[in-house]
Image 1 (spheres, rainbow, N blue to C red):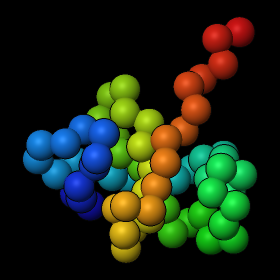
Image 2: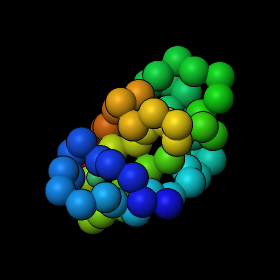
Image 3: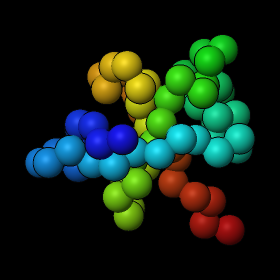
Image 4: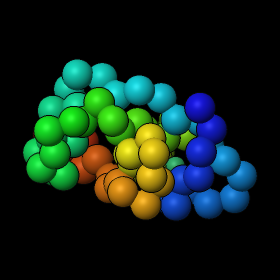
Length: 67
Ligand SMILES: [Zn+2]
């Protein structure tokens, strides 16, 4: 599904469903009970996730641990 990504800007970006681990992360970051309602930008380097139905309702996954 191609939707607007505020990080990437420009043309619409393909987003994908979240993995189980990503859903757990969204539950922590956003404090929501329905993390499956979110999806993630697939452009390399972009860590944006946002709600299917509202691109403004989103955040970024934290950078991977360096260690
Ligand atoms: Zn993006």
